[in-house]
Image (cartoon, rainbow, N blue to C red; front, top):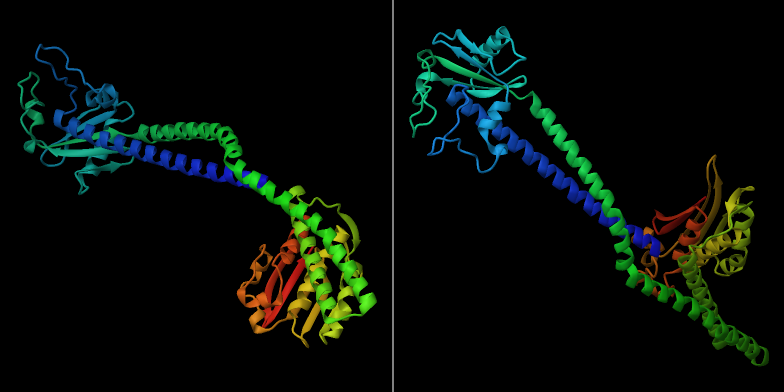
Length: 431
């Protein structure tokens, strides 16, 4: 149980780390793509404004004005690294001049075709293939110099002041850059995730130590108390036998005997659960005949069922060879049969049937019960100490079926419960 708790802690912590890294990677890549796309749009606007010329602002001394944020945010540096084409169209929409000096993979005919295609679109700015385009009406552009607050040499030629200017910006490298950034960020995240495993594992020992110590103390208490109670129970039973020998059986001796038997069963189930928690209930699994073991488990309950006038349908079937722990499975069936006798009303019906197919051997045990004893959720019957208030008068402790489920798991089998009809509950054992 401690190991399972530690593994759950590690899985939960690593799941939280995974979610955090995934969200972080997604946010960083989305932000990177948005910033890059916005930078491309601003660069496109600047190319239109400056007619594609690379101009540099100067400081008051006539020197180069440095960008305080570095070249990463310097649009002039981005312009030098970018591939773009300028296409001038006259007022009739015909290509008058193309400037392909800043792009190498585009021919003049292809540039003209793209320009005419962009001119036919409604949007002034958009995307055609691997190019961003922007068109500007040159007659509506501001003064023929890029900086309105300062007079500079290099005004635009007269032929660049009328008609339409179309700028094509190559963004084919944008997808590759985004993918490279994504792969690098994912690789870094994987390294961080792997680096977190060891600290989380070490931290799990520290975090679950108080719980592990508490569980260990509970196991030791149950085991020690169980062994200590066995002795007084044996003495009480022996004294009851002696009392009946000398004074005869009475209702008081019968009550003492029934309660000691009940307490013995309780301690046996508690010790089974405690042993399962401490050692994982490692059983020796060997081939045996389940049909024969089923008959042996039912034998002690046959007479009590007859005395209560219960209708019993017991069909152990033919020989059914399985691999498991014979003694532990007899204990499992004894728990199921005892539970059936306890909750089946007088004159009710108990059905026990063994079935075989090509893969599994299945034992189905069903019994009738009164409406107030029918559980609302049969699957919860296997929880430790689970009891519905309406069934407390029958006197169980809610651990017998928990022990049965634990035995089934130790035998690599499955034990389930379901409502099989009105006031009928069915337990299915499959191995």
